[in-house]
Amino acid sequence: MKTVIYSIEDVEQAGAVIRAGGLVAFPTETVYGLGANALDADAARRIFEAKGRPQDNPLIAHIADFSMLDALCHDIPDVARRIAARFWPGPLTMALPKREIVPDTVTAGLPTVGIRYPSHPVAQALIRAAGVPIAAPSANRSGKPSPTTFAHVLADMDGRIDGIIRGGDAEVGVESTFIEFAEGKVRILRPGYITPEDLAEVVGAENVEIDGAVLKGLSENEHPRSPGMKYRHYAPSAPVVAVLGNNWDCAREIRRGVRGQVGAAAILCDEYADWIPCETLRVGRYGDYAAQAHRLFDALRELDRPDVRMIYAQCPDDRGVGLAVANRLKRAAGFHVIHARQLFVLGLTGSTGAGKGLVSQTLARIGAEIIDCDAVYHEMLRNDPALLANLCLEFPDAFSGGTLDRKALGRLAFQNEKELRRLNDITHPHIRRRITEILDKLEKRGIRFAVLDAPTLFESGADRFCDVTLGVTADPDVRAARIMERDGLDEEYARLRISAGKPDEYFKNQCDYMITNDGAPEALEQAARNIYQKIIYQQEDRKHGTSGIA
Ligand code: AMP
Ligand code: MG
Image 1 (cartoon, helix red, strand yellow):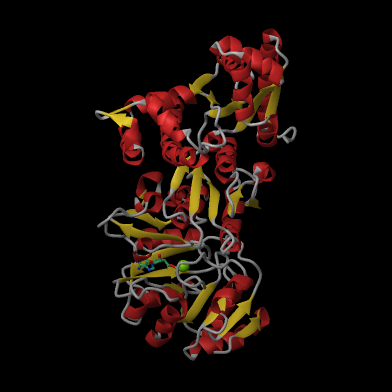
Image 2: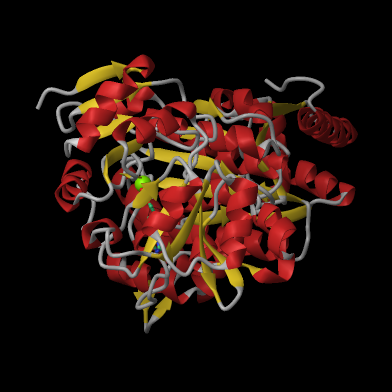
């Protein structure tokens, strides 16, 4: 099918197409709609086909004057008229008892029909030109983000419909607020630009309800109040994670999440966007919910590409229009929502004998909670059933009488690179699981600063938990002396240990900050304190937007 592109001056022609049973997409203030004659069952059926929309998901009928409301609906409650008087024309849809002339195809067999009187002049002109109410869902392929620009509609619908009216970008950016009336109350089935607070001004806050599925999604076997609630929506092909929390915590959470991940992308507020090490799309200033609503679908569409493999998106709170944005985002994420951690984690690593322990002690005195990963690992080797079960399968010879012999495990694993890798492949995921549990506990206790002390911070993947990483190195002579003293080894053996470990470069290349220990403990402690101050100040500056961080 050839899709005709109409300019906004061509509404008369486009209206005639609709009157004759055709499909025309058109701009509205919320998103672009895909219109057909709402009184023509065959025309309405074609909408479902063009979108690939499930037959049981009803359409909204758009009107362009108040008299059309009474032509389509009966038993309109007084409260509906008051709400209409206040918010129409505008981004609000009401489900009302339908009259006979509204075909079942439009309402998917429901006794009610959703009615909206859009404020967009082109939408109004089209409805008047058609001379009939226009049934119109969003003009996207079913499941994809709703279209907010002409380009979005063209991408989804070219060749599938009769025409598209080329207008400007949709101002609101999310679909209309959808409400129904029940027992004197107004229930919001889909939040939008008209907020619960707005509705409360007309009917009183005690008479406004938000359907549970809006925020949490439907649980299994739960019956949706609106058929549309049960479908996957707005989703780009990559999985989306919605991140809740204040602006700074969200930024750090997203930064940790995307760091080092191939194909990661992020959608977030302007303030920290340039700090996130992946492709980022900005959705306006923090707290500017209207800007976020306006930008969200375009951002989701832009990231709907094969090279994008995971998307982190900052989720606003539920205030005002934030409720609508959060609802769309949580749906796009399939309700995969995480709470940004408040706890700040510094990853501490370094070469053996370099003085990492002293740095850790210094940070503990400053107030950090220390997580000693070596100790965590050894504890797990004693009594972590999941890890031990795994090891028992892979290294049965390290067990005697059902208990692990750590020395035997060491001998087996250190035979060669391959065996060591095999051991690490087993242990690292378990260690990360345990670290996750420990961090969750600290977070719950309200701890704000922790140090993850791990010689194998990067190899184990524990660096993904860290906001910043700090490496400690020292001259080989200094290290040899310390190892000899600490572990009671002779020089030859100490030097052998050093040469078996990672070179300084390894840490310098990967850590955000470095300390070089020149052998004097007081100087090392002072260096640790200085670096702590530097890190904290830079984080604070970031938080308050006064300077950048490398
Ligand atoms: P769309 O047209 O794509 O913006 O979607 C319209 C939304 O309104 C869908 O979620 C429908 O399930 C919902 N809807 C339409 N009519 C009704 C109705 N009579 N009762 C409840 N929900 C409805
Ligand atoms: Mg839709």
